Image (cartoon, rainbow, N blue to C red; front, side, top):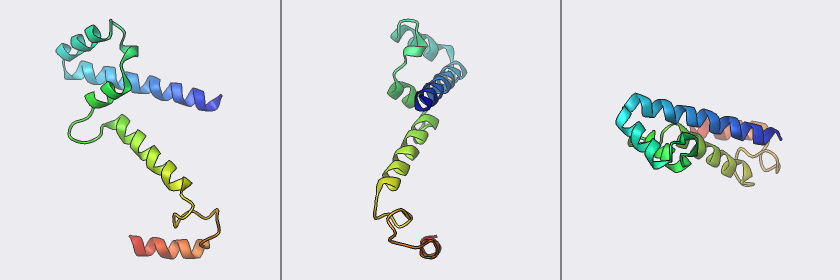
Length: 102
């Protein structure tokens, strides 16, 4: 239940940011988007909204998504050097490795 609440809260905040961006960038884009989505901004596709806030690099939404995916990939990797659950490295060894990789 908590995950669903977090998800909907995240989407709500995302839609608010998209709307603020569109209004800030100009009424022309706002009208185009409203027309394209049948006067329902809450129906904006996540990909379209994410692309609207991107200028040559990932915008705020895509940055969050990419960061989360990399964290999940890292945390699920049993041979990642910082993964202390499998016992490959002790805490002291992990700290030593962190010093080397800086």
